[in-house]
Image 1 (cartoon, rainbow, N blue to C red):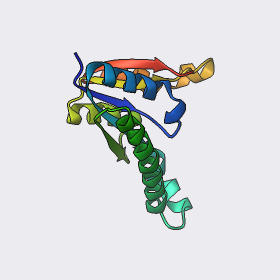
Image 2 (cartoon, one colour):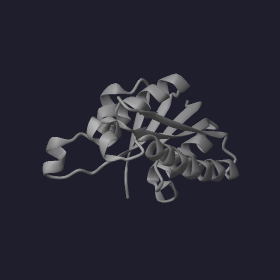
Image 3 (cartoon, helix red, strand yellow):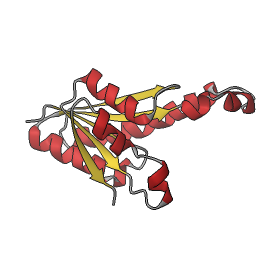
Image 4 (tube, rainbow, N blue to C red):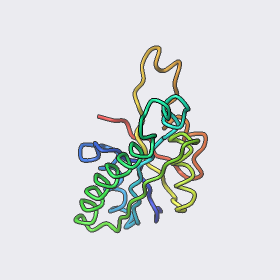
Length: 150
């Protein structure tokens, strides 16, 4: 049913229901798994951030990428220990939000399932911001599985 599964994860992957679900489904369908982390640089790309940081945003972005690679390497090692063919993807943009980045990554990688967490915004937060999962429900180019966080 699914041959190429992509999961959007963060540095809390070890306790993540998204990661656990991705591993279980990849094992169940003998699917290739891409573990993906999106770095939304839009706040850093704003002029004020560039001025406020004495060395510019490049060192901050480099640090974010390195941190992402570090936890993704651990996650892919865990997947491979479980016998799953896995790879990592770090994606970023100064112009696109996380949902757009994940949608494009899923399309580029030709994923037939994208798994992401569903944030649990409440009250005023729900009124003023849509979570990544909600945005992807409209934008994802493939089947989408929204997993509630613990």
